[in-house]
Every structure is written in structure tokens, then in C-alpha cells.
Amino acid sequence: MRCVRCLLRLQSLGVRGPSGRPGPQYAALLQPASSPPQGQVLRHFHGSPACAKRPVPADFFDEGEGKKDKSLVTHDDLFERVARDAKTKATFNKVLDVFTKKDIRRRGHVEFIYAALKKMPEFGVERDLAVYNKLLDVFPKEVFVPRNFIQRMFNHYPRQQECGVQVLEQMENYGIMPNVETKVLLVQIFGEKSHPMRKYQRIMYWFPKFKHLNPFPVPLQLPEDPVDLARLSLTRIADDLDAKVTVYQMPSTDITEAGEEITLPHIVGIQSPDQIELLAKHNPSRPVFVEGPFPLWLRKTCVYYYILRADPAPLEEKTEEPYDPERCFDYPLQLNLELSRDLGDDESFDVDDLDEGPVFAMCMTGRGDQATLNQWISGLQQNNPILGQIPTLFRLDAGPRELQSVADSDPGHGYRTGPQSEAQDGAEPSPEAEPDIIVEEEPRRSQGMKQ
Image (cartoon, rainbow, N blue to C red; front, side, top):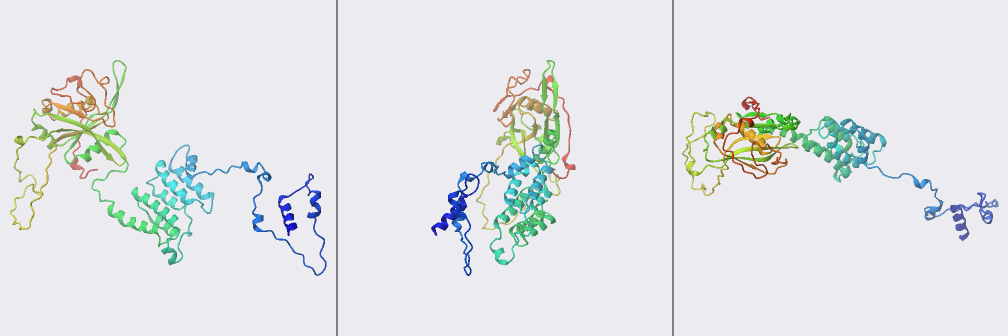
């Protein structure tokens, strides 16, 4: 047996002479044996599996074979390579087609789908139903469908089902309602009794109930024009349908006499008739305040607004006016009802009524410095002449926009700028500071609903 092992080892090592043939010392051993005599069966030698799987020394490898490129390309790199020029819907679909046609077995489809879900906002297809259906089409068909009740009970292919649920959850987060094609794909991939199919059924049950539940929906595409965006934002903030939007200044670029280029920001304000009446009754000896900026989120866009308000009136100045019974016939503002109360009624609780003071007007501007907001106050004086007699204090916070410094402001106005600055404005501004006012009034009662 020792000789047989030596022969097998020599054959596996391939010991050869200089001419490529076996060496002379091993030639006799490697020569085939003579034919056996009659009646004797030739026995074959079988090597051990451990001997066959023995690693071959590195010296017998060809150096060129080890230099092959064995680097793995991740799915994120695949998206970046295909979308070098532009990240659009066409390039995203091209990546899906490349992965689908690369391997008929769709190896690594779960990792690819997770990477595609992460890249969808970058390509701008996070709200496209056709792209989600094409992403579900990446799954192999009729492979993960359970064949019996035991496979359904033990969550057949849980990793793939979880990936399918993640696709539907991202559709739910962006408010995308599936269609019949989505259902057909889920039935072909996972079957009718699966977790993705249950998720689809829940979405189809709740989405029609919640679709028109919000009475003040925000449009999917917000206006790109800053003036239109400010008009939409102020309309949503105001709680009066009779409030009017006024554009005091349009964004423009002007060149001074010295040749310097000056950019004028937009100034858009809103005020209701009740606020005008309330401001006319304000005591001129008590100041009003310009405060802000306050954030307002419209989907993924954040805008900022400023308010004109006053402190709550003292108790001695408060006068309770009687209600006009003919002011509103549909919704009476006061009811005098004498109802018999039970002894078990508990009247011990109390609610604190916090008076934050009246708000007279609101505005949005492209630049949150004091000089720009003073132009807004100057424009309000046309409908509110009492502002020329009321001192105005500016309480501006250091918001996201940098406030204009003293050196950049107009020296003729003499205003102080900066966060938490309070400058008293007791007199009317000079005629030189009067801006070109463009008044655009929009009665909101005709709209019928906040847009």
C-alpha cells in the first residue's frame, strides 16, 4: 500500500524530467503493468477524497491567472456608473434593465432592490408608480410562492417577503396608491397568501379613506416663484377668508448712480379687515412689535414669516362689547340657556385662558433685515394711518438668513440692525424711503377652500 500511495502522489505532483517526460528514476514505476494472466481480474486503485482535495502548492500556479480582476461591484456603484451624465427616470430604468438582463436567475436581487429604493429620491422617481412596478418585476416569478399550508405557516422565504413589504411601505410613505398591475406582480411573486399581499390589501383599504380627508391639502408641486410661494403660505396661515394679500415689492435688480448693483427682495403681506379695525382701535401710546422669523413647513420646503403684534391690553383698558345678534344668523355667537344642572356635575376644574396679544398683520420677505421690514411697515400705513403715531419696535432673531449689517444698510435711514434689536420708529418715514408699492388684493372668499 505504501508503494501505491507513492505512485499516486507522484502522479498528482506531475514529476517530469527536463524533456517534459517522467524522470528516468520514476519511469519504470509509472509504466503500465503487464497484462494479467488469464482468469485474474485487473484491480484499479482508487484514491482517497482527502487526497484529491489536497491544496496544490502556490508554486504550481501560473502567475498570470492570479492577476485576474476579482473585485466585486456594489449596486450603488452600478447606479453611479450608469447615471454619470444625469440622474433621470430613463437612467434609473436603464439600471433596472441592466440588472434584469445580466443574470436570468436574478442573483442578489434583494440587495439590488434595497439599493434602488435608497437611490429613488436622487433620481426623482420616488412618486412614480410605474417605476415601483418595474422594481417589483425584478423579483423572480413563481419561485417564492408557497406550495402548501406548512410553507405558508412558516413564512416561506422571509427575506424576500420582507423586501417586498419594504417596497410597499415606501410607496405608502410617499402616498402612492398601488394599481392592478401591482397586485398581479405580487400574486406572481409571492402568492395570494403572503405578507406583501396583506400589506397591499391594507393600503387599498385605508388610502381611499384618507385621500381626501385633509380639507387644506398642500399641492404636490410647490410654486417656484418666491412671490407665489409667499402668497400660498400666507393664505394658509391666515384664518380669515376675507384676508387680502398685498405685494409691496417685487424682486428686482437695480443699479445705483455709483454703478453698484443692488438686489431688492420681495415683500408680500396679508391683512384682514378685522385686523385693520383692531389696529385702528389700538392705543397709540403702547408700541407694536415686529417679530420673527417663524418657520413654516410646506412638504419639504421651509419658509419664514414675520408678524406685527402688540402686547395684551391691561385689564383696566379691556372693554367687553355686546354681541350683535344680527351679525350671523347661521351660527349664533352667544346663547343664553338656563339648563338645570345635576348635583353630580363637577365644576371644580379650571382652564387658564392665556392672552398672547393681537396680531395685526403678517408678511414674508426675501431678506429678513430691519430696513426691508421697515418698508413693509411703510406700506401698511396706507391702510393703517395710525401706524405713523405708534412706536414700532423690531425684535428680530438670528434665523437662517443673515441679517443685514450696519455697513450694508442705507445710512440715510439710521436704523440699527442685528438680532434682538429694538428700534423705536415714532415718526413717518421720509418720502425718499417710500417704496414702489404694487398692491394686489385677492379676496379669499371666492376661493371657497384654502389651496
